[in-house]
Structure formats: C-alpha cells, structure tokens
Image 1 (cartoon, rainbow, N blue to C red):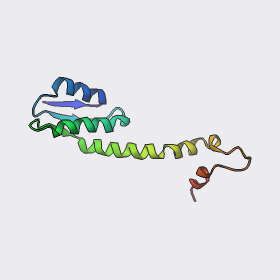
Image 2 (cartoon, helix red, strand yellow):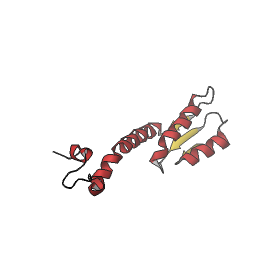
Image 3 (cartoon, rainbow, N blue to C red):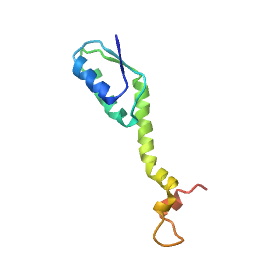
Image 4 (cartoon, rainbow, N blue to C red):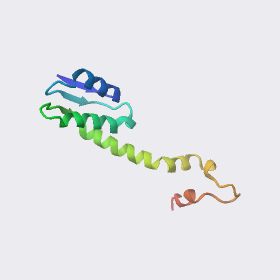
Length: 107
C-alpha cells in the first residue's frame, strides 16, 4: 500500500503511526508548503536509512529539487523586495539610492 504525503504534518503523522512498519512505500504527490521541503526530506531520509526498514519514497528527487528552489528563492528575497518596493530602500539623501539597489539594477 502506498501512503501519499503532501505536508510536514503528513510526514510526522506517518512516522507516528507507521514509523515501525517495514517496507512502506511513500509517495509525494504535491507539496503544500515549499518551506517545509527541507524538514520533510530530512525526516524521510532518516527513516530510509534505518537498517531493515526498507522504506521507499517515490518523488524524493522532486523533494530534493524543491529544497534547492526554496534556497534560491530565499536568497533572492531581499532583491525581490527591492524590485517590488524601491521607495522603501532609497537612502535618506534625496537623489541617491542605496548601493544594493544600484548594483542590482539591470544593465
């Protein structure tokens, strides 16, 4: 039987109820919150590494990609904030903008 998970809460509930089950197959069909991808991956990997459990996680490669995408988005967030609201990032001196805004401007 395949267990479908979509969120960190699903993973925690699955580990609580079926954590000792051998040979369980878990399928990641969609992810409700990208920010939980890293923790979900850690919990599932931990379970997969337990000797004799033989858990299989379908879609783990997608979860790995979501972790990378979330990291890129988190890194880009300050720049996105500057692009969306440049007036919040302008310096107090009229006619000048902050260094981050000018260095981030497209050519």
